[in-house]
Length: 200
Image (cartoon, rainbow, N blue to C red; front, side, top):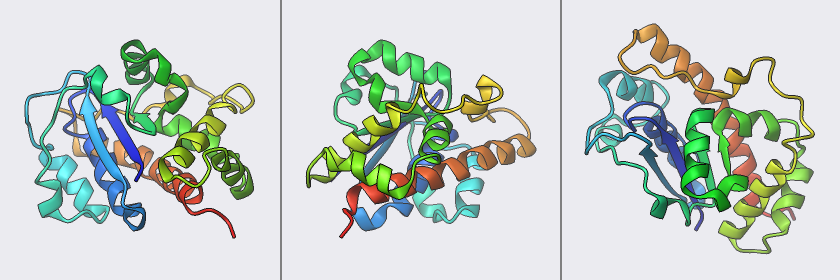
């Protein structure tokens, strides 16, 4: 089993949406996917708009309704094989709590941007350093993506590595946030699937 942690601010919009989508789309590999917020509210549900987005993207309403927010603690950062934050600020906060995990931590759009430049063979070759264990393979794949950070063209604007925070804003902003998140989820699913399903 491998673990993925998604992180945003309040853990009621972006990170739980990412959590649900990753869990659903990686279900054949039985991952452990969780989420947390850097300023997490205490046991709050996803916003109605975030639930609506989740349902629109294929998550059953009753599944989305089970979410309760939690605050990010350093103890949560040692186990995940891949840590995906919604913004650069969240990535920085993870790095401050657990500096040793920086190479396994990305904004989700940063991960997608870099992984999209890597071929299937390159991702699988990176994963192979982890042997046959799924968790070790996901970690190794993540390190392979991290190694490309200085070799891949940066975004035109740094905020293109962020997913916009829709909390308290219009439905159109929620839709914009989802339009930034959903393609990045696809790239994560591709990379992780390649990592945990060895070629041949």
